[in-house]
Length: 460
Ligand SMILES: [Zn+2]
Image (cartoon, rainbow, N blue to C red; front, top):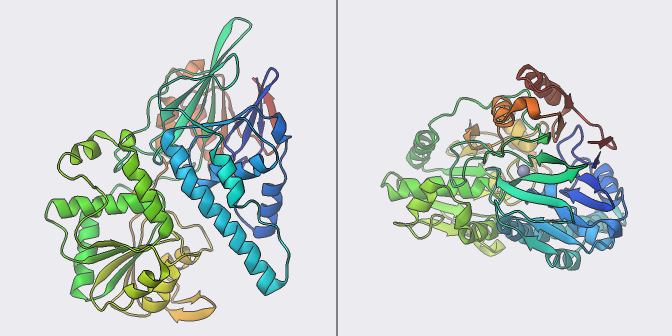
């Protein structure tokens, strides 16, 4: 077995690892590189292998940095199967379509404003063709993508449908077992189950997003939310929550719904103003098999965990604009999570200068994003080319992160016989954090921890 690391090698996007197993080629994830536009476009367009020679793709989860370049593969002639859990398949249907729309609008924008001709990476037809190749496989059911190889999905607890992938094969009469973590979630999160135990393995390809970083001590998220909402009502203001459309938004709605069911949520209008979030919520409703015991038990008394009196899902632009006509206090949940694009910008332009406004950030905001600037306390920000003074109150509740932190990863990877693990490969992280995680893993007893570079080829 040979592994070639092409994406998410010493970086966090573009997850792609090519396995060569005898005469077969299998791709683990096919993520989109994100970052500086021209550079990312080049990386995404140019495949490092002949797509027609690939036999199968095994997909850990639907996040675009893991799935977003699948349509390019299909465009270049890939015709094998894409194996993923049923929930991952369904999330991909809406997320890849959304990604195609973004590519197409981007190309239109460049042509109109910069007279630059850029071919979209892929279009809606490519996405439709991609969806035909999906072969959904539930958790804990082994399957053979190519002869001689057995693959099993385990719940990674990171996103609806997210999986850690265990690959088994035999070489010279010796059984070998390798785990690809995908992205690993945390214990005790809303909706999703805790990450599964995956047992003893010989090799691990592991994510390292939060290497070197610890999440802040879990606060009482419900209590903090309630106190912020009560304050917003008192000030007769708006609560703007920039949230990632898939995952974070549903968790937030789940919390609000739960508070409503227990009679704790004060009356306030809630608007979910993101078409992608609305579609993603529909996919969540379709997959109760991914829910943890607490969330399943809630279904006995509440048949829709993502809806309660006062919540409005706004699909079209007209309804979205109408939100700002309302004079009543309201919660507005909209993308994007880091305020880089999306409908949240329209609401921010409307309300950020008002002292009665509160902005609440729920997750990681990368450096240099508008979200990060506001969290850092910048008093003047640019939205749609105009300057606005930030008079809104700003809060950060990082308790909803979807990734295990440094300590969580060490614990997750160590939950097996460490001495049988011959090699750990760290991917999907920034170099500094990866070094820190490698150090801790060695201290925990792992004999060899590698941080492959882009293009590194390793035979195991
Ligand atoms: Zn992810």
